[in-house]
Length: 303
Image (cartoon, rainbow, N blue to C red; front, side, top):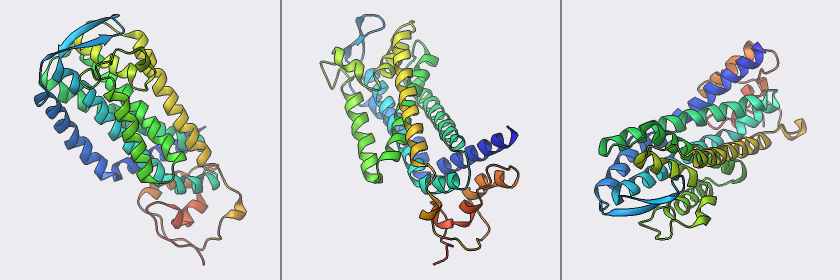
């Protein structure tokens, strides 16, 4: 059990380092989120807009810029977290497969991806909520953060799933952008006058959007919509982790090339390989030697 815990801790460190290496995503989080939240609030007209709240079973009236900012915040977090998880999962896939082939537990790697997703989504949701609080005062600030978190988790899971089934980074990013655009644009009554359609409840971020708007307008906990959003989040994360586990499954040994003596591992390798020297069942010796499999490594294999 202690050895398995060491493997999990090393895999978590590796997953977090992969996220921190994605400097573009970090810059987008720091700068794009406040700029987008500011623009959607200040540029959009504050004319009253009707929004149908399923939890209250009635339509409420809110300022148009508040509705647009809420939808825009969800959209930006969905794109950013989906982008972060897609890139990190896609680029680490070859190295993950080498770790599994060398005896590293797949469950450790999948749990590490899940923990990294939750931490990234929580940080982005808290950051977005803090910026929204600058411009207006939601009735339930914590519930607003929960709504943003649920939306980020949904698209983070979609990002992991797409990384396991789509080979091209461009195609994966296009799918994340288009799915989130259709999902959240249709729920904005300014963009879609028929946003109260019953069909919209089948969209991934419907529960998250309803939760966020309810948090801003009413002292009411939308249990059903919150459960619906949470179910989507769990479903997408589960699908993503399952797809990741299947893609990282061990291949037959005769499909790999012999490897020569390796140089000393560096960078993100050390985060994962550190557990190997201390734990029996998960020392990724071959992963350490085949540097060509690591997304940031160098080729040391024998020709």
